[in-house]
Image (cartoon, rainbow, N blue to C red; front, side, top):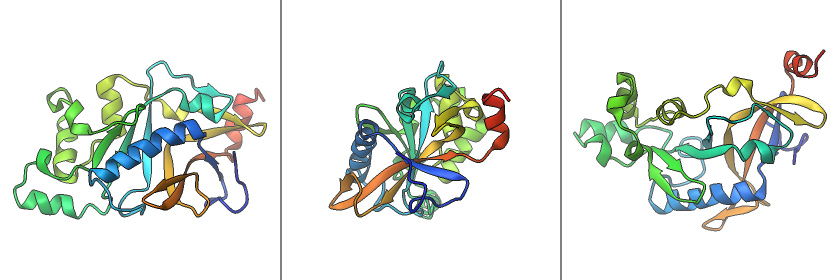
Length: 208
């Protein structure tokens, strides 16, 4: 559902809550990551979002949020966003694989795994390893390339309230007193941002 009044943080975006079925998947990932010590709290300096990774033959035009999310094959999370502990561990000479990981893959069955465990860096550009070793970051672009997943996010379009809009491939997690999900007693909810104000997009896909 969209909330155009009290739950919007940018004028040109809708915040649209994810369907319950998808939220439950994310909630399982979150519960597992928290239990494993990958983050402490919902906070932009710690953890507050995830990246959607889509199947290679994903559609680019969707009628509903549910159909958009049904093409997701895995989720990439970045935690410990203040990035202070990672370089500290690096300076101490702790190997990258032994540090508390910042790039986590969430699967649709609820399981999570550090992203480095599924990536052979020898098959990627040198900067992929450098970004991981220095910052702990494995990007969604790296995973898309590695697994041969869909990359053309700029093409995604969604019909919402009679308008053609562009959904973000990120979703956001925020504490909310009436949120549908809970972690250690703290309620939260999960939403997408959808760009609704690009007149060029609207005209092009409306055939005008």
